[in-house]
Length: 279
Image (cartoon, rainbow, N blue to C red; front, side, top):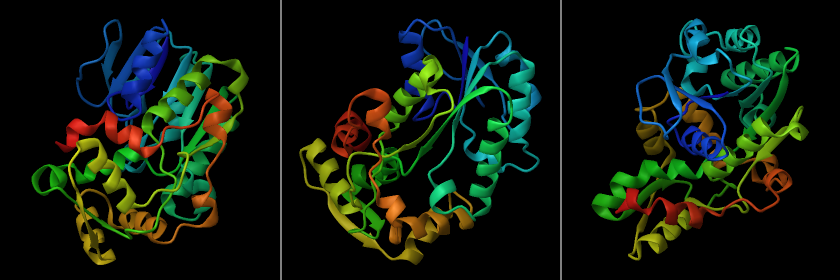
């Protein structure tokens, strides 16, 4: 049995499907009841309360740990999840971390994530750590404006980073869960090329077969919009990266190729696969 947390999200959903297709028994964990592939067990649990994971972990051999906002929830203790997994007999944990623990290690969220990485290393469990950069799926923030007005509004229109397709993250995670050779691996995951917001808008237009206009926001405009759905501190951190990426954040990593034996998907592939969201 393999347990997948965040099982209904952009990474967890394709990961759950890939594991099920590979013939694995899978338990999908999400905060609310959700549809899952045939043959997959679903357990509703709040990761801010690790004790609630006990039913999901019963009989599990491996765990994919995606914490998302639960890492920052009041009273959350992510280290307890690893302890609960070990106590339940889980042998392997694949942790979704972030490239920011290396490139911008001093923000509170990255300090907490790095501490969790270190705790996992010392847990006695087999482990692998995935450190993705920006996600192609963040372009879904533009879906409403593209549908209604055929416009993408974003800051720093000509500053790019090598964003990654979440399905590539899922495929790497599946390999790390299933293959012994990845034990102790730390993988930095990026797309195949640096791509700017303006170029992403062009790729979405290509997938739609109709023009999409790009409107450049000021940093303050973008911060105001982003702060409606995330803490202001996280919005500022994100804008720092988008507006002035470091050399490490611009680097195209070879790790997807190393794990999967193929190059990561370009943004245009993600846009074509998700074009319905923009129609």
